[in-house]
Image: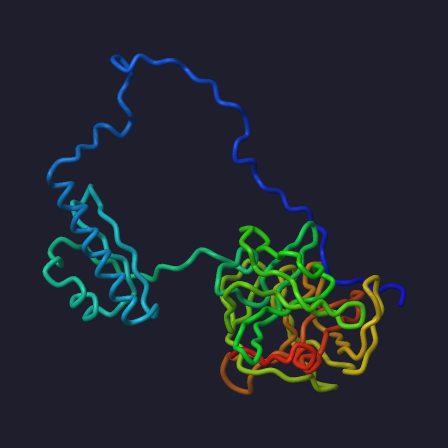
Length: 320
């Protein structure tokens, strides 16, 4: 079927050299060598006491999080200028007071949330759907998390993104995202990524977003519904898609796939969005419901593998 392309990208990814040039060595007489730049920072008893208090408070924080979970965030460090231990946290004041106990007089508490620095193009475990992934030069998007009867989790993505046995990594951070298995080509454009930790969320928002949505369920799309969405590394989150068919056929360089969903309208997927979740919102709240994953398009019509076909092929259920 001429004119259709798989929605993958071959954007080159470059990594900086860890050692750009050779280093010359200069002989220095240790007896007359200049002191290190940080040598004037004295390690006196006050500094030692401050470091000890910081270590104690840090240990208390770790124990608190291990006991109560990660609902609240913390950052702990010694500030030599203030001569105090700084605790940055979004935990309630009563919890912080109980945690600090007798060390409270040596601590300055600053209210605020500490967050992981990640985004859909630089994802971290537990990995989400809609993140940028790459294998070799091909860039795609992750889809959504599924689990088998043994409760082993996988991420679904498009089969044309990488062959069986290949390793997908995060687009920017080069973290191992998963090893490919169950590639369904040429008739089914789907595969599983396994071996890592995968969460029950998909990215929303723009291409550099670090926020997302909880996945609450999965099923097939309904023809005529006008507000389906996709969320991929190239175009971000876009809605307003109309399902034109759930019995479509699409033939690309990777083979012919049928039945698949055909959808139009709104900002459609582009190169690099292959594998991204095709989904719908809830009647109330922010939860999302998976309907499949993006596989192909031509700028006017896009195509998605159907959830029911994914579930049947791999004998899996959606992770919520």
